[in-house]
Length: 95
Image (tube, rainbow, N blue to C red; front, side):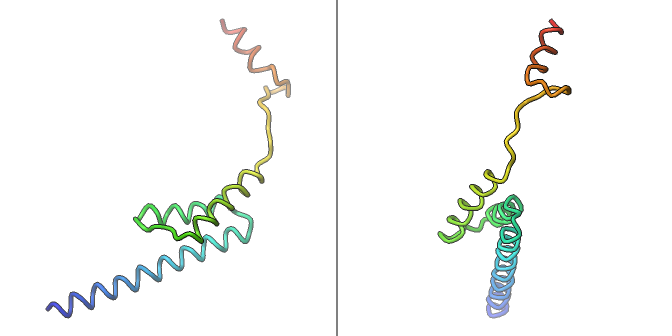
């Protein structure tokens, strides 16, 4: 019985390692395609189940997070007419 339990744990460990490798592959694929948000979510999935990222993926996470921020367009708050003061005017009128 003990041998069966050990075999089951070993099989579970192998399946877990395969799942982790697959998930890291999905993260790599997403980043290679420029979808840094998706790549970061795959890493977060691993952490959510208790896995710790090694230094390589900690570095990649930092790089992907920077790339994600850089790809976001800079927007300013505007009202419906494109006037940046429009939200202020709407608030002032409601007083």
